[in-house]
Amino acid sequence: PNGTLLDVLSATPSLSSFLALVQATGQAGLLSQPSPPITVFAPINPYLDALRAERPWLFSTPEATADLVRYHLSSPGLW
Image (tube, rainbow, N blue to C red):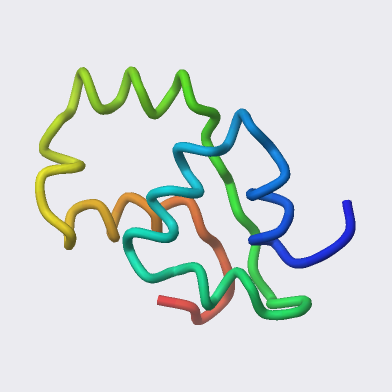
């Protein structure tokens, strides 16, 4: 795929729920950089739907949701 990581997320319908979380938690800027030294382990929509149903506290506050998004981002020294 071409473009930034944010472009790839935006172009992939099965990752739209994760994209919404990325945007809601302010991580879009990080993923819109060209060639950031980061790996994204983006969960597909059914996974996030099930996670929201089984562990709603992960989505209960902005801080909890940001932690969930950061859990799916990996880069040496990022956090």
